[in-house]
Length: 247
Length: 247
Image 1 (cartoon, each protein chain N blue to C red):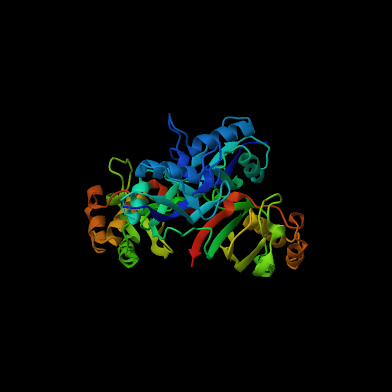
Image 2 (cartoon, each protein chain N blue to C red):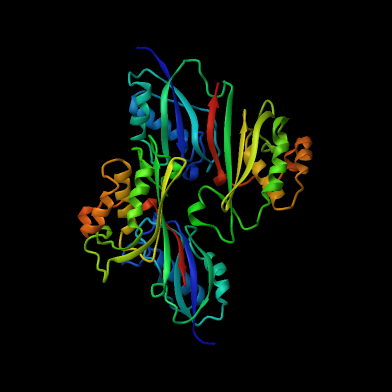
């Protein structure tokens, strides 16, 4: 028996976590996975995550890989691990991958959804997964603005200032805005996202939808390559990593 | 100034409450409303609720009324009260009604939704508002069975045994079963519901959808007028009071 690499699809409700990545203080998804896996497999495990989501951000399918000497079949790990995880984290499936497969070093597509609930007052059952606003939004204006984001661009204006990144160029494959009853859903698919990128895009689209910025301003914001040009960072609760695909 | 009666539409996430009605121990929606209103209006307030929902059941629009001597306009009470309520309870609107208007003594229609999430493993962001099952359901069979419920019937088989009720006859106006992606949604509208009625109906429909009972059994269950004839009581988390209409 040798070492094997296991890939897991990890879903979580980020409400009660300080994000994905382990920090000295504060509970994280990564810490929960490392602890539960180390106990289950009786060896020291450290997972590598695909998306290091912020505090409060949710995921239907983030990706984590780890190496193990265990003889437990890779596809059975999901069942055993879910028994040991808190109910706000659930492995959706697990399987073996080649030892050199790395979730951040492969061609991939990530899809994020940002949900905004519009009404006179907040709706309690929506509060954990949608950002509330009492100002109406024009989704047509938001859609027009979102179209400027599609393609390969320098997204420096949509990156939290101070973030250390080699390149701020990313490709967005699609950026859709859809009304679902009282919610507006922004769905963005790209080959990668900068720190806070989707939340800053959402904050900017809300400004546009509520008439405080023209849709065509999106082009100028992109070209400015400066965080100050864009709108505010929308709250974490509205954001969910929906899907992670790789090739 | 005299006394006036105020009607409020109350939305809540029932996860952290022991239901609507005040109990000696345990936090309830009613207790939160009574405390916040009494503080706000500086007089002793006791609300009367339309639906005394169980522990863990949610509402988009339950109804509560109360009488007050306050000069605060009835339609402004929603704003002031929401400042004092926990974020899992929110008044959706408030307004004055005649002093003899009573939410349980008027002709009304209540609509409940019961959500079931089907997958190999639970999805954390669904866990508070949907009942999870890993067994597939045939919604066509469920729809066929639900049709037997429509009309005026004695629903004694769908009432928690031991519940004290004068009559177990109710009218169901519609009973729909719909698939929404990975969820099955049961939506039932009626002039009133017995204790645990929607949850027992949901539990019975799940039995039918998963092939453990024939759809036509629904007719026999109704006719049996015995709680033992029906399926299990489905968990509270999947249930939401969607709408309360009155005439």
